[in-house]
Amino acid sequence: MKFTRIAIVAALALVSGRAYAFHAGGVAQCEGCHTMHNSTTAGAGTASTVMGNNPTIGQASAYLLQGQDPSSTCLICHGRAGVSSYHVYEPSLQTATTATFTATMVNFTPGGDFAWQANTGFGTRNQRRFGHSVIAAAYPGMVADTRAAAPAGDVAGVYNGANFSCVSCHDPHSKARFDATGAPVTGLPIAESGSYPIGGALPAGTAMGAYRLLAGVGYQPKSSATQPAFTVSPPVAVAPSSYNSSELNTFNATTRAGQVVVAYGSGMSEWCATCHPGMHNNTNTSGQIFKHPAGNTATMSATVAANYNTYLKSGDLTGSNAYDAIVPFEQHAADRASLEAEAVGITGTPSITAVAGTSGVMCLSCHRAHASPYEFALRWADKEFIIEAGEYYGVEAGARGEWRSSAIIQAAHQNRPATAYSTFQKSLCNKCHAKD
Image (cartoon, rainbow, N blue to C red; front, side, top):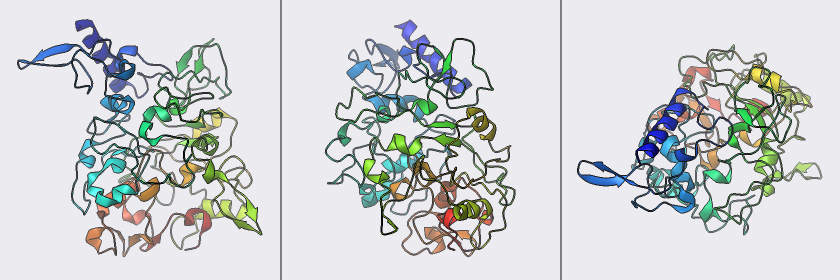
């Protein structure tokens, strides 16, 4: 089995060398996720498995996975400690056990850290969940949602939460492919990731993959036979390659430079609606909207677009094109090239402007895709104030009913300094609505 071990190490080395080299926009090296025999290796006189977290030597997991289940397999690479572009689960966050949560976030990826969903330090609050309840048997706390009823808007009675995993949303063998403009194509090999700028042309006769390997039309994981199959294409978006960055020393509250900007094109809410159809009913009755509009048809009014472009902080509408990556929106752009130019890291300045009748709210305008330290994976504080008396409003600041530390609340806002906002900063719902 020496060959297997070498191949796996080589595959992981590719991951650390280039943010998307291992997956490369489509199916990765087979041996990076699967094992034929789960063979043994000698170590300190004790036999152990070659790779992964399957405890049984000589017997592979279902689907010949390296880990005990799909998510445990993904977290072999994506759940390691420390800062990395591809880390989505920080073990040190999950192990906190105190009622007052004081651990410090280390990763700042746009999707958030799954450890918030798993954290035992949240105590009974864990019943409410802070993100998608991904199940990974090899990781304590990564368990099914234990609420008796499905959350509002979920496919109650259809989706089996006991089978929910990373591959419920991401297709590890992704066959979805697109041309350089983002239009779906067939019959071409995938040569580039669909997550990052490709710089114009693709190599002749090739295609690029889906953004973040998100599921394409017809996808339904074998491990969850009750999951609804996707009927829409993956959302169009472009991320900078250096997307995991703290903005503590870079964010400029006036010029908006120094933030990580993912340029969202279209289709995110329609894609999420596969499993959350109840959250996408925009019915108007006597002028009352009972669900927050989101999606390709939920465009900004002139007032909302003006609020977004000028809102810097509570009480301050003096900005100009004041894009905020914590409150992103879709541009409903058909031109992928424009999205590539707008996807910038902390060394750049956003060029995105909210346009009335074109720009619009999507699910990720308010929620993290993975998890956050706020209930329902919200992007900003679920209290009246984010900042009070010039400080992030944490438990040690005397916040009423707060149990998270100020450092965690700051980290949830990409680690931006408190001076990036008003002395008394209210909810970032005001980025669009300016009611503060």
